[in-house]
Length: 310
Image 1 (tube, rainbow, N blue to C red):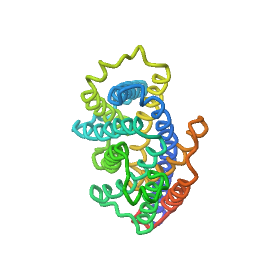
Image 2 (image 1 turned 45 degrees about the horizontal axis):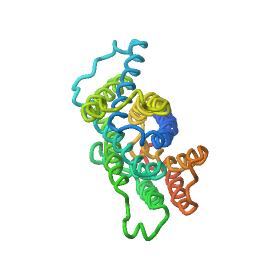
Image 3 (image 1 turned 180 degrees about the vertical axis):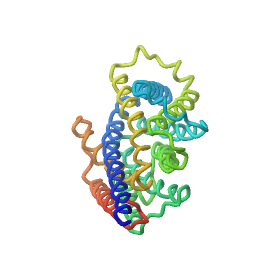
Image 4 (image 1 turned 60 degrees about the horizontal axis):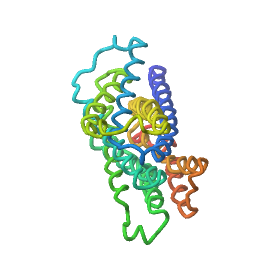
């Protein structure tokens, strides 16, 4: 009896480890999307750009399913689920590029680090996932670090709550992303991850395409520089199809708060990428905020009370 009970525990830990590895890849990919996005955001309308990336990503995922014979699996039901999930991430992507037209990628990455705290709240409401006091404290610590970076270490700006319109817009987008994470296990009905990902991408294509319809046809696609097409390729293949798959894979194995904990690495990764690309290094006064975020990540990734999950 004890051996039988031990096996599920070992299997659960193995699956949780796979979820952690998926999110590590996720944060590496998405950090590149902020840098790439900062380069191409001023060159093309956000709605048109994201409509195209969704079409490419959906087509790619459909081709992968066809090549692997994945259509033989049980077909998804209740298609409204994919419209909701695709709409949430579609809204996040469009608002992200609106922000990148108004501010820098480091601020965008910092705003995004607020999503784990929001996601933990949605996780409790939707799934009754309860985080331990230590984990909740780390979420608050990371949120404080993110606010420090967003306001560039300016205490007067924090006291005045002098936040730009881009950051406010992107906060709404991040709320959409935070709701998406616990909704994946809530709405999944046993479909394979790859089919569930395809359905989500198709739902996002439908809604973002409808929203950006006029922008798509008014864009001079032939006149865009090559960097835009390089950015679209990266965003569609890695930062859309890839992260949809990775988040859904991890969300079926980890609590919502821990799935999103990896975004705490974003500001540091974006700062490094921006510096290496010659776009300038962040001011030293934002480093305490980065340090707080990293400490929070280390707390969240340690094995804690059972209520928090692995």
